Image (spheres, rainbow, N blue to C red):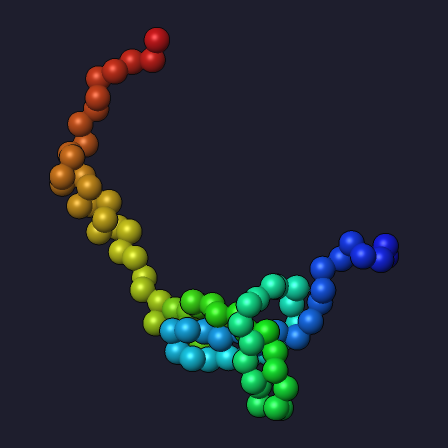
Length: 88
């Protein structure tokens, strides 16, 4: 590896702002804020909006779209009329 061309790889604390879930991992992200972690050390802080603790797929609160109902609603609204245009 060439020296001086790679970003600084360091431990960073990520906090999910929607439920205050936090975890520490290594990253190259640059942050302006810091936080004191459980081990007493201070680490850069990155605030995120979604994590595995708040994402609907992982929490089991995922909404399933009723695609058949949406198609039927579209057909009722617009019908199955042909536009009558032909390719030139």
